[in-house]
Amino acid sequence: MYLFASSISYHILHAGVSPLEKIARTALVYAALILVLRFVGRRTLAQLNPFDLVVLLLLSNVVQNAIIGPDNSVVGGVIGAFTLVGLNEIVVRAARRHSRLNDILAGRRSELISGGKINERGLRSTGLNEGELSEFVHADSLDDIERMTLLPGGKIDVHKKAPAEAATRADLARVSEQLAALQVAVAALSKN
Image 1 (cartoon, rainbow, N blue to C red):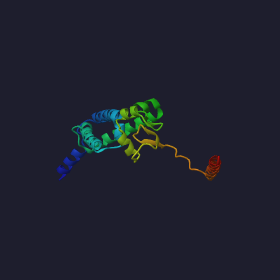
Image 2 (cartoon, one colour):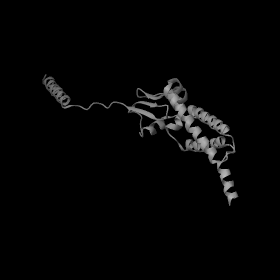
Image 3 (cartoon, rainbow, N blue to C red):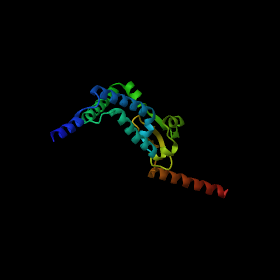
Image 4 (cartoon, one colour):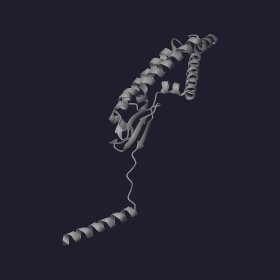
């Protein structure tokens, strides 16, 4: 029984690769994923379609194998998890402090609609189309959108056009007076 328990604890706790290799593998995969998501990911982050979801699910499995290598131990998993979380915290804090680094890692805003008109260049750079813009705002038409921006984190910032002002009682009274004056003028012209 002791031999069996010893064998189990050995396989659970003994890392198949050195801690330094585990850290290096995790850091390399993290850096590669940041690059991939930086250049193709804002559209994916903005709105997942079924194809994007499949790619993300498969991507997670592919990089898992690159991170763990031949190691299935608990210790190896804990080292990988701490490395990922720690590395992410370092990168996020550095990006917060240095705006240039943040621009490099996260990208900049992309104007999709500006002045009520669709920005074709912004659409091309993000890989989006007009139909997807309508889906973002849950609208059949984009006519009431003044500005729409895709933010670096994948969120969409939407500003609608200002609604036409409703007529006040004073406006209605003024129009009624003008209409009455027109009626008097037309009646006077009719008599001549």
